[in-house]
Amino acid sequence: MGLIVRFLTSRIAGPIGFGLAALLALWLLSTLATATVRVGVLRKALADASATLDATRSDLATCQGNTATLQAALSRQDEAVRALAAEGASRVAAAEKALQRAKSETARAEAASARILARPPVGADVCERVNDVDRKLLESLP
Image (cartoon, rainbow, N blue to C red; front, side, top):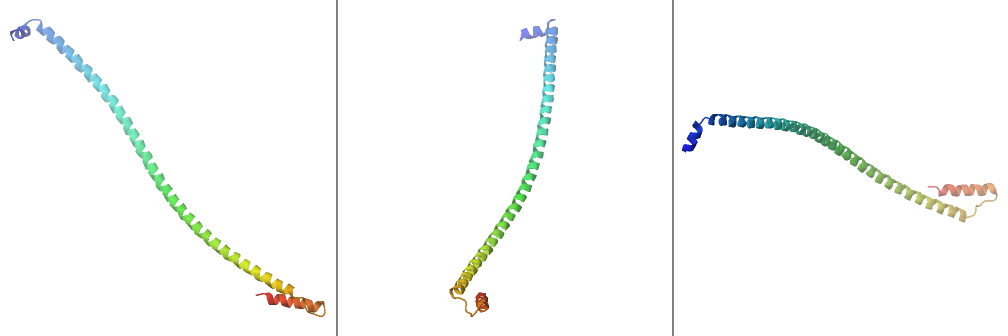
């Protein structure tokens, strides 16, 4: 302990203490400058990240709006497709009925023409035979 007291009271202690204080002050100034620069860099990075986050949120809102619009359009389109399918089925059923009626009428007409052709016209002259065929045709009509 005596050695420390002698050193602190010696003439060289003042300049050494001042030198150490100056070095410590320079180190503190260097650390402060480095920290200030680093804070500036971090603030810029934070501002950039905030701008990116804002842009991403804006893009997300746009995507969500587009998704809602697309879903609504798909729902309308699905409804229209279902309506068209129902109308198509109705038209097919009506066409099948019309086809069956046409086939039935064709069969009836063919049977009537076969009956007419199976019996030769009756009559003394051409006029009576034409009238007989005309009568048979009229009788075959529904």
